[in-house]
Image 1 (spheres, rainbow, N blue to C red):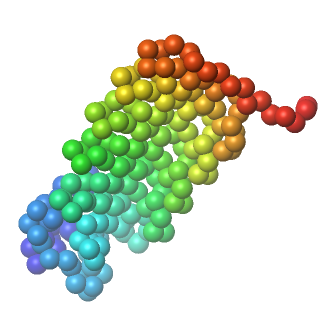
Image 2 (image 1 turned 90 degrees about the vertical axis):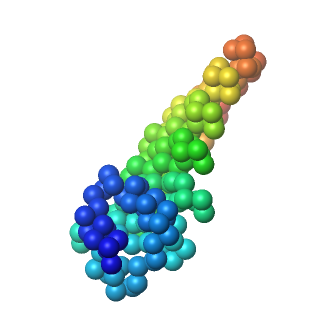
Image 3 (image 1 turned 180 degrees about the vertical axis):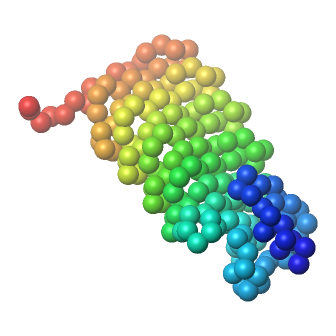
Length: 178
């Protein structure tokens, strides 16, 4: 019953810490009745914690690995990812950070290599790549630039080797005449 009080006093910024604490303490999963009276629920596998925002259908969620490390965190609406989302490498560094809308990627995103260096930056619109995406080699040198229009290749795509020398340039102009 002690951890039930913790759930009532848990603010949004503390959900991650409380989830890790409960996991580390091997606290039992809340009963259905206790979950209904609490603003935070724990999944049946004990690895996902979700905090409801009053009576709204908006919530914040945190997922843990079997070893108790944060694997993802984000906002949800009507049970689907909606808002800011981040996934993590096992050491806690971000792997992917972006925006979701009704369960699909929508907006700017960044991916990183496990060493913390940027891997990709780009944008999604309704789950499809849109606009310029830039990718980097593991050594930090720009690798590729690609543009998309609603998921379709567009513009000039460029590729560089790991020393920064341009090795390929492909034009993806529309074949439809204007």
